[in-house]
Image (cartoon, rainbow, N blue to C red):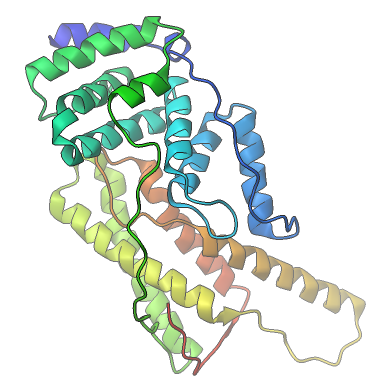
Length: 320
């Protein structure tokens, strides 16, 4: 059995994988082309349309959760993008599909064997092993991997329909709930102490996961998730309370004014960037660097933002 899996893993190279059609991308919701978030999102879409697999994966993640004012949540489109890039050989998307089908199997016991066979298929294609699957299901996964590798006209959408996966996630009706006030600070120094503590603890947990990845223990994953939740709270606090600090000056020196304009533009760009970074707070196996890199990116960009000497709004009642 292991020999068969090894052989299949070796022969299934990206250029042999079945090619799905490139999913059509909807228009960006916001037409404000001056908004840096819109600029960044449209740049990502443009790269994805050229066939850049990393950009396709990143775009899939954004449609997976939705970004207010930029793109609505569309689980079906996200899945199609993951599937397209996975079928083109992109490892991170293949890993995502393993986790997707494993999670779907837990929710849908009636079709769990089919779903786990699909997960097994992607594990063989990607070269990443999975456990907890019966020999019969694994054999079916091996069969599907072989068929997928040679069938150039493989209709992925029909395969997904056969497994009874809904095209779009049915989200529960939203109910009004009391908003929780964000943490408040008496001074910028108090905020800085809080920021440094949260980011230090997060990076310690991040470095453990980064080093171990799939070998991380449940307690280490739990510790990472707990610190990632605190990092998201820091993100909310920072975007709600940090504003650009305009130094009071009466100078008419053109060069000084130009430098001030540059600093403000730098702040605005970093501020928009940290506001849309999606920090993973619930790691899914198999753990990849792609899942955790956004948290470290946020820590770095927030540090750069602080270097621009922003102003902290004190005494405001901010809720989320």
